[in-house]
Image 1 (spheres, rainbow over the protein chains, first blue to last red):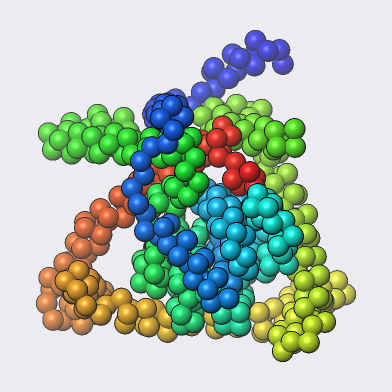
Image 2 (cartoon, chains in turn orange, cyan):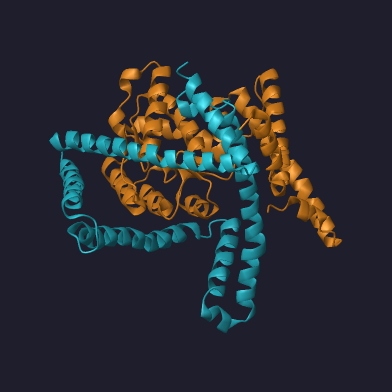
Length: 268
Length: 205
C-alpha cells in the first residue's frame, strides 16, 4: 500500500461517532500542555494540602521510630492501569523517604510485571538518595495471582512483620476491606487510595487517611513538586470547571426539552 | 539512550492505542490484535520471572533459623507438588491436580471471602459510631438504606424502600459521579503525561 493510499484509507476510516470524544481529548490535551508551560514559567503552582499525602511523611517517621517496616501494595491492578502507574509514581517518592530514614519497605505484588517495575522504581530511588546498598530486592516480591490468596498472603505478612505503616494505593476489589481491617487490628497507620468508588467506602472506614478520586493521580505532582506535573494537575481543575458549566447547560437545555447538548456529548 | 528507548516505546504504543480507538481501518485492527497477542506472550514470560523470584526467595527463607521458615517450606511444597501433578497427570477433570484445586484451593479462597462478612461487621461498628453530627447522619441514612433493602422495611412502611432507592439514585449517585469525573480527568491527565514523557517516575527517574 502506497503512502497516499494509506492516507486516504485513514481519512475515510475515521469513526465519526467518536468525534466528540476526540474533540474533548484535544481540549484536555491543550489545557494540560498550556498549564505545563505555565508551571515551567512560574516554577510550580499552588496545590491545596492533601492530608493523605502529607501523612506519608508521618507514616514513614512513625515506622522509623518504632523500628518497623512500611508495607506498600498496589493491589490487583496490572501495569496498564492508570491507577497502578499513579501508584508507582507515589512509590518512587515514598522509596526516597524510606531510603533516607533507613526504614525497611515491603512490597508484596499480585502481578509479576508490577513487581519488576516496583523493583526498578525503588532501586533508582535508593540510588538517588545515595544509598544503593540499602536496597533489598527480596522485600519486593511476587506472591500469587489469586485474589484471595493475595489477601491471605498480605494479611499473613501484616500479622508476622507488624509493619508500622500500611499504604494501599492502586486498584482494589473485594479484598480491600480484608487488608484494611487486618492492618487496623495490628495498629498500623494506614493510607489508602483507589480508583474504585465502591472500595473507597471501605477504605474510608478502615484507614486513617484515604485519597479520594483524583487525589491518587495528583499525588505524584504533590510529592515531587515537579512544576511540569503540578501544571497538569491545575489543568484538571480547569477541566472540572468546563464540565460543571456543561452540566449546568445540560440541565437548563433538558428542562427546556432541548436534547441537542446531551446528544452532542453522548458516546456511541 | 537507556532512558530514551523506553520513553519512545511508551509514546509510540500510547499514540497507537489512541489512533486505533478513533480510526477503523483493517490494518489498524490487525495491528491492535497483534499488540494484544504480544502482551499475552510477554506476560507469560514475566510470570516465569515472578515464579522464579518467589521460589528463590522462599528457598532462602527456608534455610533461615526462624519459625517463619515453616511457611516457606509449605509454599515450596505447594508450588513443586502442583507443578509435578500438573506435568505428570495433566490438569483435566478427575486428575489429582484438578482434585487438589477443587478441594483445597477453592475452599481456601471461599474461606478468605467469607471472612469479609466479619470484617464488614467490625468496620461498620467503627464507621457508624455516632461521635459527630456527620457520623449520626451517616448512621441514620445507612440504617434507612439497609431497612429499605430487606422485606421488613416494606412491612414497616411502604415509603421506606422508595426513600432508600431515592437516596441511592440521587444524593449517593451524585457524589459517586463527582468522584468518577475526578478519576476520569486524573486518568486522562496521567495518561497524557506518560505518553508525552512528562511523567517518568514509573521508570525510576
